[in-house]
Amino acid sequence: MLLGLQLMPTHPGEHGNHADTLLAVVRACEDAGLDSVWMADHFMFVDEENPDEEVPILECFVTLGAMAAVTERIRIGQLVVGAPYRNPALLAKACTTLDVISHGRSIIGLGAAWHEPEFAAYGWPFPPLRERFEMLEESVQVVDRMLTQRPASFAGRHYTVSKAYNDPRPVQQPRPPVLIGGSGEKVTLRLVAAHADMCNVAGDPAEVERLFGVLAAHCEAVGRPFEEITRCNHVSILVAADETELAAKLERHPDFAGIAGTPDTVVDRLREYAAVGSEYVTFTLPDPDDLEAIHLLGKAVVPAAADL
Image 1 (tube, rainbow, N blue to C red):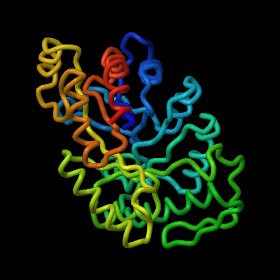
Image 2: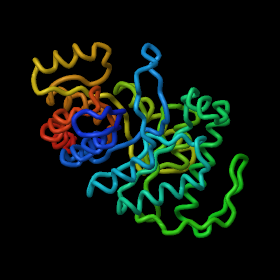
Image 3: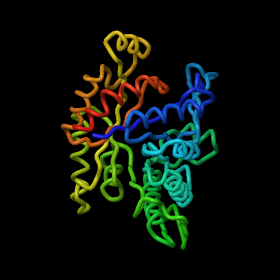
Image 4: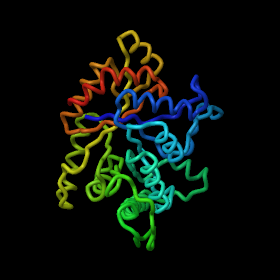
């Protein structure tokens, strides 16, 4: 099992400005042996209880470019791009550029987008859910063609690309892996079966097992081997060196929901996901710039997870 951290909003802290703090976290993840780090594709959030409190959100692709420039091994991706935010040809160009900057370490994460307040605040139309999924399905096809064909053309209901050149080509051939995120049984997992290399679902082990079963049925329906898809699930992890530290962290985060415990407990819980077929776990940390937690994961969890 491989592990990847989804980066969360960070404040400047002791490392410098917002970007300095985030890059310190990314370097720690690389040192810890994590397989990947991921940026959410968002533009704003508002703390409804404290609207004057800043919630710092860095733009996804600019930040991923900076992360690629200061790392050498760790893979980088989006968890996940909101397809309606961008023309998919432009998205393909950004994904290709990121793969070049990272020397072939990028993963393309795609989703239908959900955070309506961003659309309203930034002046973007917010299509109905069904239409957003249509846009996602067309986007993944445009991205695939732009990264694998030269020139690329596509004609759909929402997007049209006509003899588009996307040079230079991505380092990974035929293209970087594509992840489609979400647990929707009728549409999202069908799109994974038809178009993606990786899925990313959520839930406890029993729910994840059930969703993998749904994905397997979609694969059978489209005539694709289920084993071709890397099966991923997403959780939150709160890790502590001992019970005293664990109690203190849980007191700071009384509403935490996810895997909480010492490294042995975390590994045991990850083993439950591995037992139902998960090959890859993406996770968040309740303290997003907790470098000690990342180092602890690297020392005591990452090596054990690799054997699951």
